[in-house]
Image 1 (cartoon, rainbow, N blue to C red):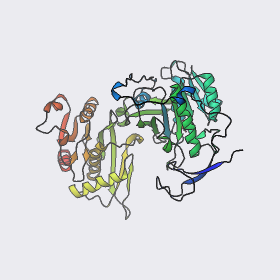
Image 2: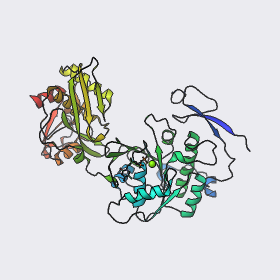
Image 3: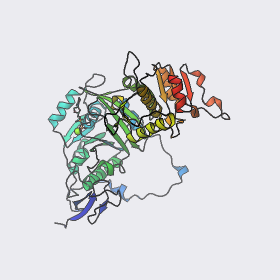
Image 4: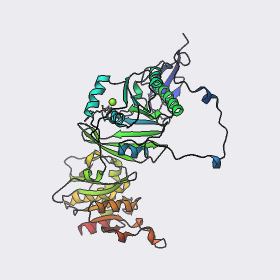
Length: 470
Ligand code: TYD
Ligand code: MG
């Protein structure tokens, strides 16, 4: 037997070292090194065998003007939200990672896709569940059109990459799903499944397979809250596209977010609802994210946000109350707590609201996490509305970023936000003065007179409050 080789891997970022280290020089984390046995070139079974010619082929430099390409041929899926996050459909030969916490619905999403791909032979490889368990799950998943599903779907319960490639060669699928990458092991590496070196080797084999046969491969990867499990973090560099499936497990809504995409925009978002019969696409998110109230209540505002190319109106809630303890509580759900502290400081310093001794709670409805800074103005208005106990008029929404001096800053694609607010029947929208073209510029670039909605142009937070509460 060949002498086994040992290396130490950082479980956080995948950094490899010949000796154990206390602190990772790459990601600066402490105590993350774990010994792994790696044994290369000893396995008798080959990994994915590249076609003999492709390995010897050496590329020559080509003038960029002479390179021709055809518009990337994409395979659309029946799931419109999935197409959106991929940038228009599946690119042949692409390697896509779908990351997410355990139990969020990754297997459900991918099995549903496998069952519904029309005229495609899909191989679903599971290292986590038995054939019977998958069949039981498949029976719960109804097709969106109500027709028969699962025509071209094949299930393989296997964890050895060598065996998987053997089956792939026999079946010749048009698309492969691996559930999950942490359960696979390659005979070329000695360490246990899920370790950094195994995950890296299995992904490299699948990557070679995807590129050489132009078969798209989807990898499911688990991450925990602290991101300690080896895998997705180091995989992000290797794959073409990284999608993150997230959401609050106690809510029905799930978000599929593009983190990286070599073939499209990296800020797209797909929204699903988890039902008894699997995931349902949510095509008009604004309508579900706005709750239907009879009378205006204090502390509730609507913000016109934008995720990727898609405008969404989201309800934001704030509760400000006198603190019962010495240290006031500050909690934000779906919003960055540091940013919330900044908003409170601006309101205190610039507008003179005494928030220092108040408990403040912020909530973004639907369990959605918003990163768009345009939500600042809506949140600030909600905080003041709750503090003063004065409701904000119905059918009012906000789109503006708050600066440290209390100025309302411009947001991107403001016209798209205005159009969405108008479409949903809002009466007025507050936007920043700085969103308007400067006096010397072409006025035609933004013609606000074509909107029916009342557009309130504001430049500072004080101005917003005098317009709202007089
Ligand atoms: P699963 O896809 O197994 O999650 P993951 O692969 O990310 O670990 O989904 C787990 C949850 O989804 C589970 O709590 C049950 C729920 N679920 C439904 O609500 N409806 C369904 O039709 C299915 C299949 C699952
Ligand atoms: Mg699963």
